[in-house]
Length: 303
Image (tube, rainbow, N blue to C red; front, side, top):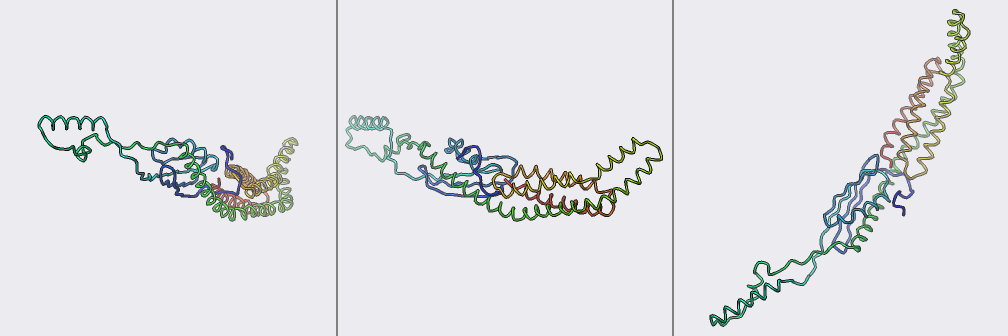
């Protein structure tokens, strides 16, 4: 698996949660992942100090399975209770025994040393050495995290499917509105011609033919929406293909929605001087903007 990019799959939400509990060489490990929206991959580790050496390996595992999102990684380790052999300070014990025998001999005492007393002396019993993290624990940690990432992505894909169920009908609605706008373009021409004749009548009074041609070209350019409808259809088709293709779609979706919004705004501004057909185009363009904005709100959660 690549360490730089998540594997291709269904469209995912950036919101999800996963928790696993496994037994490792160092004890019982509980690991949880929680992700929410973020523009990039933002990892936050909350792990005990003994697991700190494994953070680089954990980070690689997460980067291989998650592309975007604010992800909190929490882990707790319950150490196994092992019956380690008792350890004592041999030098201290031998010194204590020598002192005991010396005193007993000097004073003619008949007594045997009491080990219970000896082991209660400060420093006599030694703490067992703590187990240091090793490769076996690292492998167990990475395996557990890989399973947690798979569980997290399963949740995120289910939420992604729910998002698509809302988004795709809105994309189809944008396509329908664009087709309606395109069908009205021919009806706009008579209104534009009437507007042009009025403008030309004003220009002719000044007997300036050059200005007349400039005004005609400017009005035609400002009012024709052919390029806008062509780009609307192109961006809508690209958006539908992107959403149904799966994988990382969030940033590309944001870009396409910006382009759709720009074309809808331009269409709206060009329809102001086209009479009744222009008013109808304005209504449809407002409908476009509404659907685009609803898609944008939902798409903010897409990975």
